[in-house]
Amino acid sequence: PSWIRVKSLEKVYRPARSAPTHALSDIDLNVRRGEFVSVVGPSGCGKTTLLKILAGLIKRTSGEVSIAGRQVDRPIPEVGMVFQAATLLPWRSILDNVMVPAEIQKLDKKKARKRADELLEMVGLGEFQDKYPAELSGGMQQRAGICRALVHDPAVILMDEPFGALDAMTREYMNLELLRIWKENAATIVLVTHSIPEAVFLSDRVVVMSPRPGRIAEILDIDLPRP
Ligand code: ADP
Ligand code: ADP
Image (tube, rainbow, N blue to C red; front, side, top):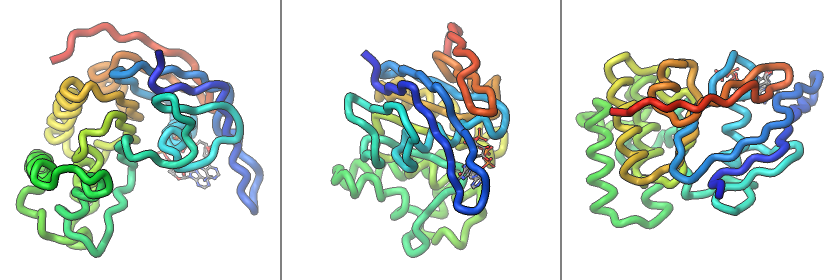
C-alpha cells in the first residue's frame, strides 16, 4: 500500500494582481513506505509547489493528497521538512531551534539532546549551538534547519534543495547521513534536487517533471547498489 498518495493533483495560483499560473496538472504519484523518491526538472516546473502541498503548507486546487491514510490539509508532526530558506526562530539559540520538533512531540529530552548534538556536530555547528540565528551566516542557518528537520527521526522527510548552500564536502556527508537515517528509521523521503547525479545516487525512483503546466514527464526506476 502507498504511504504517500497523490491523485489527479492540480494547482493553480491566482494572485490578486496578476494572471493565474497553472503550476501543477494531472499529478499521480504513489510512494511506498520506506521508499526514497527524488524529484527533478527545470526551474518553474512545480517541484516546490508539489512539496509544499505534500507538507500541508499550501492548498491544492483539486485532487487528493494523503500521507499514511490521512488527508493532508495542514502540516503534520510526523513529517520533517527542509525548505530552501531556513526559518529559524530569532529569539532561540541554534540548539533550542533544533530541539523544537522534539519539544512539540514531547520526546525524551536527553535522547533528543544527544541527537541534536550529533547532527550539529556533523554539519560543523558543534561550537555554535549557543549562538543565535542572526549571528550565523545563511549557509550555517540552512544547516541548522536540516538538523531541526531530522532531530525527531521523522517517518516522512520532505526536502526542497536542502543541500544547495553547502560546500561539496559537507554535501557528501549530508547525503550519506540521509541514507543512514533512511535505512535506520525506514523513513519515507521525497527530495527535490537540481542534481541528477545526486538523485540517482540517493533514490529508488526519480520523478522527472516538465513545465507549463507542471506535469510528471516520466518516473525512472533506479536499481543501483547504495553505500
Ligand atoms: P526554485 O528554486 O524551486 O526554482 P523559485 O526561485 O522559482 O524556486 O521560487 C522560490 C519560491 O518563490 C517558490 O517556492 C514560490 O513559493 C515563490 N514564487 C515563485 N514564483 C512566484 C510568483 N510568480 N509569485 C509569487 N511567488 C512565487
Ligand atoms: P520549481 O520549484 O520547479 O521551480 P515552483 O513550484 O516554484 O517551481 O513554481 C511553479 C510555477 O508556479 C512557476 O511558474 C512559478 O512562477 C509559479 N508560482 C510559484 N509560487 C507561486 C505563488 N505563490 N504565486 C504565484 N505563482 C507562483
